[in-house]
Image (cartoon, rainbow, N blue to C red; front, side):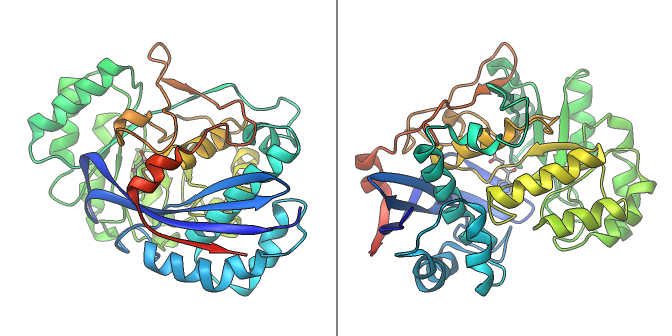
Length: 373
Ligand code: OSB
Ligand code: MG
C-alpha cells in the first residue's frame, strides 16, 4: 500500500474522575492521534504519551517531535505491504516506543481493512483457534483521598460488573489499604500496582502483602529494573507482574530466563506496537506464564486495538480495558460497554479497528493538527 498522507492530531480530554498514581495526578488526559491514508482507506492509531514523563520518558511534545520530524517522513510515499515492515523502517530511531506504536497501530488498522479482516482477525492469523469474540476485563482505580472513598469506588465497580479490581499503591499507602479491602470484600479478585515506587530495601513492606491473597503485585521496583525483581520474587508469595520494565521482546525473554516475574502486563504501546506485543505474547505463552493486556487510559481508538490484542489465545487474565464511561463522556468514538454477567467486553468485528472516529468531537478536543503528504 502506498502511504499517501498522514494526519497528526494533539487532543486533550477531561477525565471523568482524576487518576492518581505513585507518579502523579492526571485530571485531563492528553494524547496524539494519527490517521494514515492509502487507497481510499484510513487507519487510526493513538500515541499514549501524555503531558508529563511520569510513566515513560516520552511526552505528547516529544512524541509530536519524533513523529513529525522522523517517523512520519520515513513512511510518506513508501510502498508497504505488512505491519512488520515498520519495525525495519523505524530502526533509524532508537527508543520512543509510544511514538512508534501510534503509527504501528494505524498501519495494522489500514492493512486489516485492506484484507477485509477485523484488527483481531488479522492479529490472530498465526493461531489456528483464531481470535476470541469477547475478552475478560478489569478496572484500574487510582489513589483516593480516603480509605472510605476507595471502598465506595470498589463497591460501585463491583456493582457495575467488574470482576477484577486493580488499586494503585505507593509507600505509606499499601498494606493498610490491602487489609481494609480484603476485610470489606473477602472474595474480591484484586491486585496492586506500585508503578516502581519501592526498592529492594522495602522487602518487608512487600512481604506484608502476602496475607491478602492478591491476584498479583505489579511493578514494585525500578521502571527499568529486571534484575532486582528476580531477587524480590522468591522472597514474596504474591505473584509478581512486570509492566514498565518490559519494553521489547528481548527484555521479556531476559526477564523470563532469569525468573524475574510470574506474569507480564503487555501494553502494546510500551513495546512499540502490536507486532512486538505479539512477539512478547508468544514468548510468554510458550513459557507458560500468565499474560494480560495493560492500558494507558486510551480513547476508543486505542481501546479497540487493546481488545484485539487481548483476543489472542495466550492471554489468561483480565485486561485493563474498562468500558468507555469509566474515563470519557463522551469519547471520540462510539462507546464500549461492559458485559456485566461475565466482566467482558466484545471484541470489535471490524473492518480494521471497527470504531468510527467522531470528527466533530475530535475537532472539539483538538489543540493542534498537521498533515503530511
Ligand atoms: O501502570 O498500568 C499502569 C494508566 C496510566 C499509566 C500507567 C498505568 C495506568 C493504568 C490504567 O493502570 C489502566 C487503564 O487504561 O485503565
Ligand atoms: Mg502498571
